[in-house]
Image 1 (cartoon, rainbow, N blue to C red):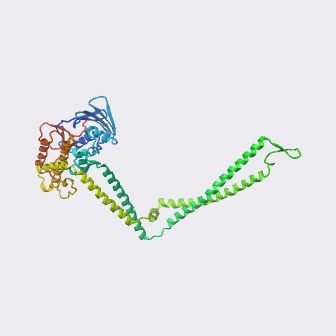
Image 2: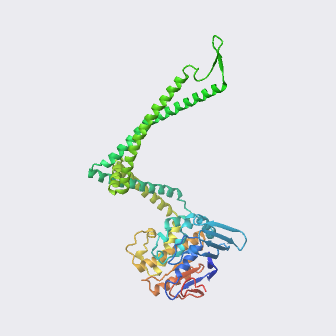
Image 3: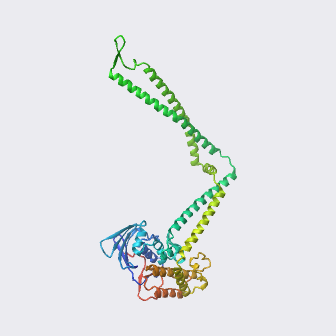
Length: 484
């Protein structure tokens, strides 16, 4: 992949940057005029979640990036904040992507691979950021929150699938975190028990809650019975009204007409009075219970107000709640120990799977060692043991040695990516001249790039000039966007 041009638009103003397919130097006489920002704009245009630089918020601009993929496709990428669309070979058809949700799909399209391990680690192979990049060896953050992991990168290049192992490892890590939190609660509970303080506040709150619950429990059957009696009364009233409206008469034994109504129906009025009396009695009982509940709730509100206004009481309440939790401290410790052992074995298995492709590991070791030695790094720092490329012991490395080792590691990653996955990426170096790296070492770095990476596009941001033929220099004077 090679970047051809980048256009940055702000309102009606546009700034156009043209890049060579070979060597590019983003140059300024002094620092803090926009060299790093231009490189980040380029990466932002590629869809990466790149952090802003001081006084330059990328979401306020529109970016148009023209590039050519490894297969020769011409892509025009337009990015405006989370919106991104890609035109292919100047045709009318477009692909639309929402970022960062669809960043994987976008990078599959740009880098022409569907290997997730390569895609997620590709920025760490091609970009050396002046802040973190020159300290990132084989794991960590490339820039912002974008990670790089050598194990996953090698798995991608070698076509090794460790997805199930990683799923299990993620689950184990989650369990360890949860049990560790439980253990901290157990420790806190142990501290509370040693204080042996009486908690009247909590017992009062508990008493009120229990009393309210009992009264509500007593009230529930009364409400049900009240509802039943009111329903019966309503039905009787409806029946009375219905019979009265029908104007029905019955004949007694003497042939006399007797109207059918509430007065002539035997026991009807007594029954109504009985039901009404029961309703009154139950309603009074419910009312008395409600009064008691309201009194308790007012008391409860006062106690709750103490929680809001009195930190001491809040802590006391919390301590009381924690002390009631039943935790077996030693069982939790054993569980954490077992989970850590499982994690160790899973990491060993992942490590073994990663190193199973002997040829790739050998080649990577060879590339890194050769470049490191060429830059003057002592052989003791690039051990014959191929495990040194996975090292996390960096304490013994000085600034200059570490700077050169990082550069060697990056070149090794780019070489195996090209050799085994046939992906040709730009090499982007932000401020390669470190405080302890002299001119001679910089010359050696440039010579390696010219000799072994001539088929790659090189982009360097620096306040220094370099001896490179056909070097395309983009000079920034006062700022990145010097609009008229």
